[in-house]
Image 1 (tube, rainbow, N blue to C red):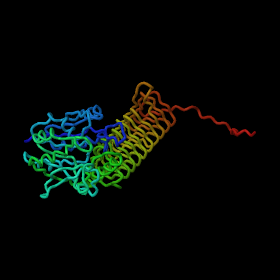
Image 2 (cartoon, helix red, strand yellow; image 1 turned 90 degrees about the horizontal axis):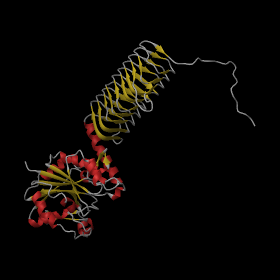
Image 3 (cartoon, rainbow, N blue to C red; image 1 turned 180 degrees about the vertical axis):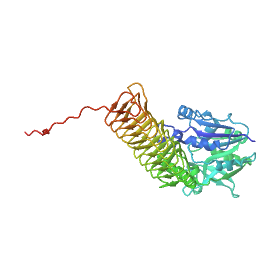
Image 4 (cartoon, one colour; image 1 turned 60 degrees about the vertical axis):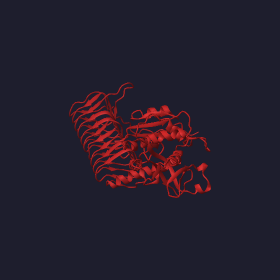
Length: 455
């Protein structure tokens, strides 16, 4: 099988983004632009992948440290031809595909079709026909319809500006072809830069045929230069994700008001209401219902679970048939047994809540293990932090914790025990015992209520 090298250009500053972050590290659907490109590239099973970096080089090295890529550095911004030349010597003796780190919606099938056209006598160029080609280089063809050159907007004549077939910048050729053409590029143009696009004319001059292909959608090849384009492509990308979900049978209240920033896997009969955000790796098993404006991150929610509105769930696993929210916050390390409930304005953290147990409202349960069928009353707090260390609270099966109780960890409440409302528990409680800490209630008859003084 012939070798394939992919060169991703990612050295630009992206000044129109008006940000200290390198443009290609801005995120689309929660992932840096350049990583979308690298993911598409990876589907082609390349022999090697090279990323040309410049502005923000160290940040890019760190962001892509886990990627199997090599880096080439473009210290001066002298155009795309100059950028590709920085990777010369890194590629082998096969095909070379040039991609752009700010074109995140490119699809592997499109690139594969382009590569299929490349051999010793042909190169491939991806073009797109646009109703408004302003800003794009135009594809110039001869009388036989063969592509013979790309004319940049600033160098184009009036007739050339009327052309609607545009250059995407994405091209493929053999390494031998590229080695012949790169040294002959000139910076004699309006920008004073070395255009990679000039290789089209060079190919034509030497008799190498320029074969063109087009993507299924112009969105595939749209680059990002400013915040407006960023927002537009974000919605387009989310629309693509939502279409895929609905094709799998997921019911969405409004596909335009849902965001996935990672991966979302759904079972049958899942319903997602408006305004929901899914981050990282999220699994919604069969029959899960997610209420409006909920945020779920790196979590698995078991079959039949219902998440009511405005709940925030992170690094949580639920066994199924759980009820969460509204306005619940489940923090990392929360584990819910089957049928467990975490209600409104409840916060959990590093907590195991047993099967059928309930924390229905206005409570904080952290660093705790709750058995089966535990009932935690409103306003209960596990006091897990002493100012230096975290301590654990253990509550046995079928224990009942009265409202407005404070359990000062480390402490164990035995199975079947009852904690009276308003108690502060600092010592272990035996099984089946009643424990409470209350001062004696006093009463004064006919007590005069204070009144405001008059001047």
